[in-house]
Length: 268
Image 1 (spheres, rainbow, N blue to C red):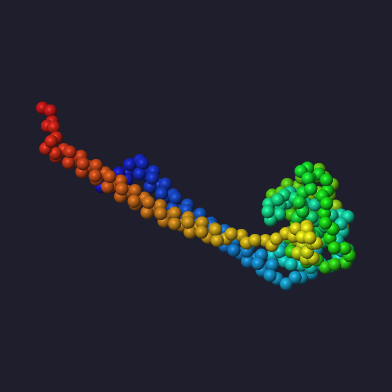
Image 2 (cartoon, rainbow, N blue to C red):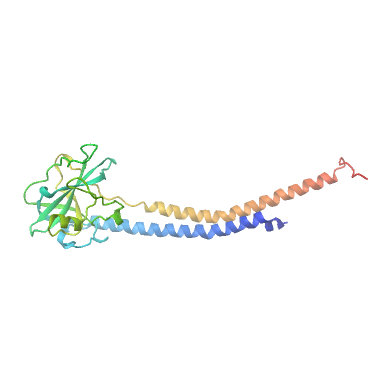
């Protein structure tokens, strides 16, 4: 009755089904790992954003590499902006995906160390982006700034190529080590994304808070893969029963044709 399962076609189909089941189960497990990782990162970011502000030098220092646990923590610093050494970071987008610059301004602390401050986004002045753009001035004099601590950018982490031969005072990456060499000063590791004081007339445009990674999507994918793995044997059984029914109907039709009185007698 089920001898057709030994045919080449059905042997191949059965082997493919047997391979698909563990593969889909493993894919579901991998998606659950991704869900756990993203959930943990989301919690880490939420904890950092909700933590009380601390002086910046409590979390970073010259040559320090900002860790994942330190990223997004709100920090404060007192000093003054140095607009003479201000630079812009090329090819950065705002919340509407418009391409422009980030404004990176050194902030000289009371002890002489320098904190890099990303003051926000400004639009590109022209199509060539070769001239230094017009930048709204920051507050003058001794002030206190607040911002979210970020690690120094690298090509490996960001995927952004650190191009050479750029126009004067334009950079591709916010890298504290490179800026320390350019400024000839002690630069704190990483940089901050400015939150206060807010700019006049909303420019530069402050950068928004980081959003959550879509962990729920990975959870849904895991369930989907496991449903697929359960569907494979179910589909195999349905195909087997259909094949058996079709063969039985074909055999019954053949016997009926042979037994029919209208059938022509065999030639003598």
